[in-house]
Image 1 (cartoon, rainbow, N blue to C red):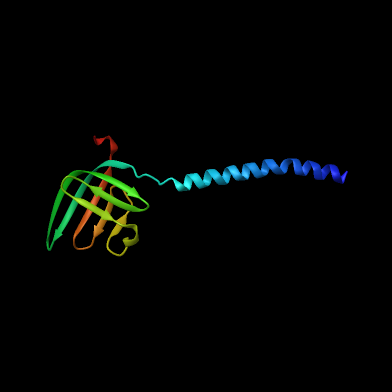
Image 2 (image 1 turned 90 degrees about the vertical axis):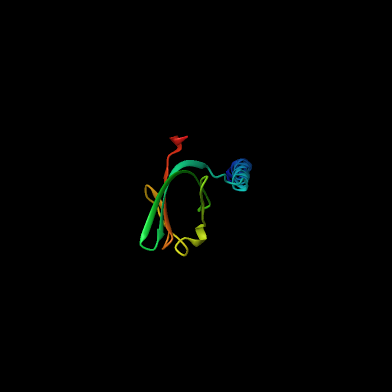
Length: 117
């Protein structure tokens, strides 16, 4: 009886090993492929602070986020917000619109709207 149980247990072992190996291989491939960032057509609103004066500029822009790092580009402006600097050189507020503030300099509001173009 015991020999039969051991034989049956050994029959399932190769299948478990194969499934485990396949799972490990799939995970290795999935993590090796670099994640691509999607560029989203957006509308930007830039509030620039110059002492008591604030200027407001609205323009079309492209929003891209990868690994927490954000790039916002347009024909007129280019902004980079590194995840490692959040809370140190800028403040990020996740709302609609998304807001990035460099205290005393500017606030950039980004409204993602891929239907713009």
